[in-house]
Image 1: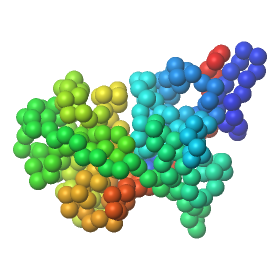
Image 2 (image 1 turned 180 degrees about the vertical axis):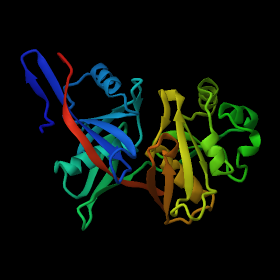
Image 3 (image 1 turned 90 degrees about the horizontal axis):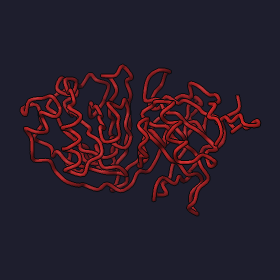
Image 4 (image 1 turned 45 degrees about the horizontal axis):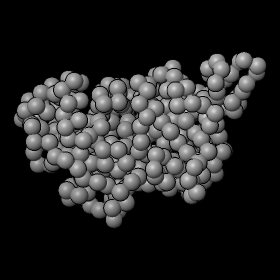
Length: 307
């Protein structure tokens, strides 16, 4: 099935694909809509298409404007906000590009916002594709000191906040507030007051909120953290797998000595939404690399009318 743009008189279609990212079987992970060959689309048309797909993010593939880049990516939420950072929005796009043979295994470069970042397509002996992406250098931002207010915004008691780790905004391309909780049960019990959380995020300079616990049972298949992500700033109620938050969390755990530098941090997310996802982030010498696989689960054409 073609994914090239198609025009016939006043009839206008764009190709699309749906990719389940950070997934090893269909209907898990974090779904991403991908629209290739999108240079002819206006910003408003991209927002309209993102609203139509109603995914946490839709990524549009364009010709690069920077010399070192092979491709330019732009991503929009269903609420129409453009998002930066290299997370599931970028990883899923490169998985589709690899699945369709548009890009072969090896190192390529993507333009996202003002950054040009390296990615690597890896195909293993069983023909499974993984993508490894370098994120921006970690930046450690503001801490949150209003613990009663934060706990209330999350529907929790203050005693459920883990004070052995900082409550801090960290960025590897997008700045998110990382909130450590004492156990998995506390993570599962989070019930966000969107208005209150939005105020806290605005005051500390965070875009979204990544609640997590490092108190994962040893039997839980090797995960270093169990997480949930909320982003009322961008109109995302909850996201099942968030690469732009996993990178900062991995950087924080290494910076705090919870995980050794040079390790791969394993993060579980999406269980509360019935879409279990596993994210892997390598941190070595200040370089953060997000990796994951996924599946292309749908392809087709979307009628969008005149451009």
